[in-house]
Image (cartoon, rainbow, N blue to C red; front, top):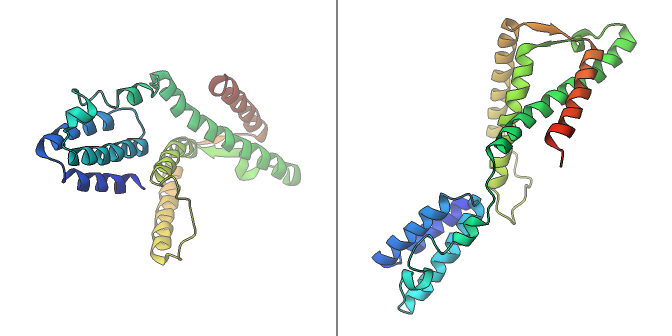
Length: 220
């Protein structure tokens, strides 16, 4: 089940609880949802817990008898088992994405520039780059990755990407966004300075970037 479906089912089942049990279980929910446990696992645990509470309620037991005196105790072991991500790790994460994206960009500029230069004697468009392009690639790598992770998190465990019917409206929206982005890029590109960059410099930057990925971000 998707996270939103489990939340909806949890809300429906909670309506069947007694006022005391509902109040107690809402404290359990607040504690687990505020923890570092990932959303999918959180809702799975909460759904299992409310189903257990409903069964035990039918036997005449209340929430304290099922989960303990303190609402935060029942999932304490699960919450404590999730490692804390250090602040430095978060910083490395957000530095790695644009670093990798720019490294790939310089690699493309170097390969294409050297190829064009060997044929025509000049690197042409591959021998220069706008400052706006560098900023857009760096920032876009973070945004794109976050969007992809949110999309993946919205899938249930058994759900996989699959082909759907052709969506003309969706295609039109994507084309409109792409056209707006292109024209915005052209405008912004014209007001930002252009940096002359020979293919050999791009190659050096690519090698430095690759070494940085290995020794700064991927070292054990």
